[in-house]
Length: 183
DNA sequence: TGCACGATGAAC
DNA sequence: TTCATCGTGCAC
Image (cartoon, rainbow, N blue to C red; front, top):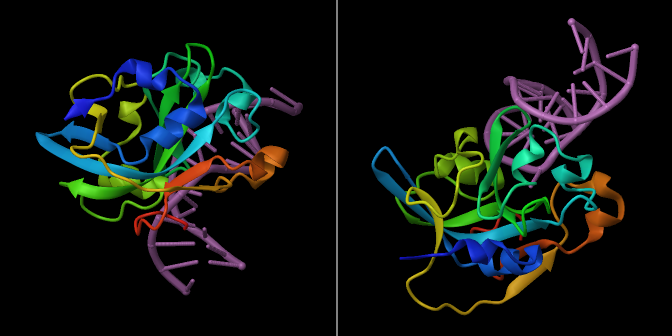
């Protein structure tokens, strides 16, 4: 299992988003290692992106987005669902990639399509906010073998309020994968 | 101190 | 289409 280094996250957010497809998300809790293959993501491009939480500026919640790359930004939506992002680009840039769907690989129970269900199945909640993704209990790794797939680009989900940014093709998923939330 | 509103999901 | 449910951000 080859863990991706911090330098992977310290790059253009769209490049990171596309390169996350096919990688394995690993979370070890209570002695159980849960693994899912990332099949759908969305890029949030910083303070100019009106769909991004960071467009509202540096606040208590968005603090992690403004921090260094390679950490998890986990927040609660609608008072009940956790969503997980990986923070990208240099310290202070405030961009991230939302993980929207996984394909179960190991010890994953329940549905994994959709950001809230993904977190529930992987036992991810806000306690993991700001958690470093280069550690040994919560990280992203290259899958064992090389895989070929094509990538579909679509507008992001649930950001219709974001004006022109709502139409940008910043949602990426693996073509034909049955675990994608909204093909 | 109050209030409007979600990067959702499940039920109806 | 409706609603559950509450942290966050910003207005008073």
